Length: 416
Image (cartoon, rainbow, N blue to C red; front, side, top):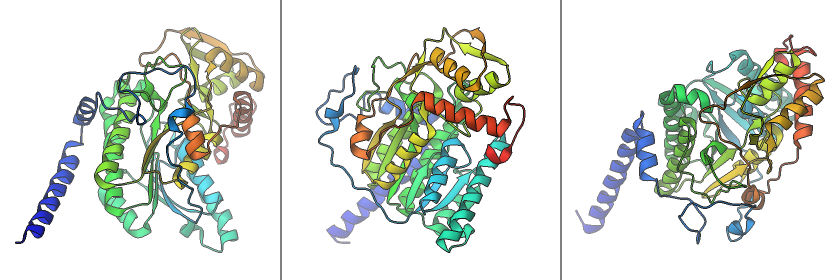
């Protein structure tokens, strides 16, 4: 064997060992320990910034001024969307169908919350595909394909990639929720870390043009910044959920470096709106005020969240899908926080009833505030939130009353 052949053989052997090692090591509860310990001092900060822990008191657009802007791909796409029976995923899939893309949905439709809500979301997507079928002169089942299954089912997923050949991947499937992750962290590791790793393995094998992965503002933990910046070192998560999301960002970076995959991670800031998750505070508050049920308010009401309306989040996700950056992390938020007391007051205003508030102690794993610096997404994606908190709550209440009636006691699954 010649020296060139020997070198090629060694490279192939190294890649094989690397691939086998990753697929073997990145399973079960070892994932968090491996990634978080290995990357404890690692930071994806812009060139020229320090690795010491930084805090930011204002937006920092200057950090991203030298990053080359990737122009959007404007042609037709076949997009694989995981988690599209859920809140954000169903809205993203709907938007992609509306603009003329073909969508492949993969969702296990688990019972984290009422599966009838998820079934309603899938039915809305079927209706949208039928509407688009008439204008596109293409059968609805060619525009939209829905698969019920676990993204960790490799036979299922490889069959989908081989049949549909999606060149654009939007990975939104995940176990959400800070508090439940404290009770069952291994469930979150399997869904969020192993699931994301498997999605990246499929991408390594089938070579999509761009991969977008959902992360969370929870990765910022107890950040001391006034504006949470992507330049911060965020390797101190305060919940298993946050740790799994940070792990997803890190393994995304690793797959980009090893296999040259274009990957963008999106940190969502407290998303709310029509068809929102029933376990989240915005939905709970509207439901309980509408039905005159008690609201459990954790803490004194001064905690603040960057509540972001679903239409703004969808706009950011679609912009990220269209722009195949080599590797980036973006905040997607409104850009300013709203205190819990103010949020409840706005719910009272638009529902037309006073809240019955039951004060509760602060919850383990909760953070005092979140506030996104969106200057990076603004420059590189053209993203800017447009829906104010007052208008967003008004729209959400209007949807809720249409779906459940003025008293909140009815149920129209077609509007869920």
